[in-house]
Image (tube, rainbow, N blue to C red; front, side, top):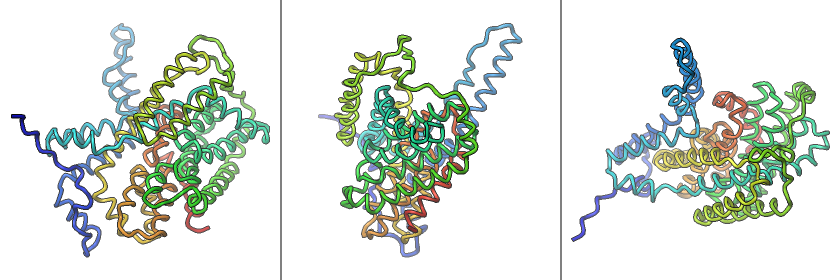
Length: 479
């Protein structure tokens, strides 16, 4: 006789299993849910600690450098050659923002194990959590960062930048205007990757001031978040609601898209005016090297990219976008691409999978934690009227992936059309405030963090994103 399988607890508790909202208000409702499933409080406490960790990564990195320096001094006094410090390496690991949610997912798994047992751990991580978005971002980021795709994008944007004589200001304005809008077609993660690579090459390599660095990355994150709203399939928070609420591209373009485009242009022009003198200074710096003439570090020689290789890479990207909801097809296409990239290595440039994999680990850990936060987010959203819902959605987005916010909004019963618009507007408007606010942000962080000493300060990112966030809010809610 086969042994009886261990019992599996439903995790998270289905939102339909909770009683109706309490007439005594939101806190009474949350108290009821916490009593019904006390593990809700445990999961949310671990999630809060993970978020706190993301704000501490710069300190861990600074501690790592100090410990390594002290270790080197100790080795020198003892007459020994310098060697890596185990403590310093561990602190460096804790200072990598991409690993934060994955590390705390281990803590969450241990908590589930102690509370519900191993069978529930397996059931939650294998069946309840959906990793589709993380897989898609890994693949599309790797494809978009390939040399043929970046060269194609750079060539197209250079034609526009020539209107401004390809000065740093012209490049900056072109990348931050066209790139995010292009995200409505090639998806936001792909647009983020291309924009981050080109901004690094055309702007950050010129060593701008710290203020301009943070203003640029804050503007990039906000513009990417709202720039994907011209269609119904490119922005993760829009994708979550498009099918349940029957929103198509025409609906998105008329209700969101044109406002997003105007907000992007206005924000860019304002920042361009603020930093005009610095852009003039950067124009005197030596021009950065174009990707089209970049030395191929795999064999030491430069190889122009043939058109057929560029077309093939574009087709692989198109396949990934079309099959984005079907991980086996996405992964299968990517494995074929890896073989193609190996065969055409002289034209692909240096192919580094570390940044995409770290970003995937970040997003995978985030959805593991986010899947257990619906118990409080859903009643919070359902308790708000239109304007508070807009601002509440933007605020929650800063601490949760905005796709999670809009997904949970689809579970709120009898949500009116104005409330639906308000929650999505808030989610995309607040998508640049933190690294975790929008799925493509970790990709930008991974590609640009080396220009910030290895770690992007959360406070600096927040300050850089505040002005464009306010502009987008005005165009979404006032205009």
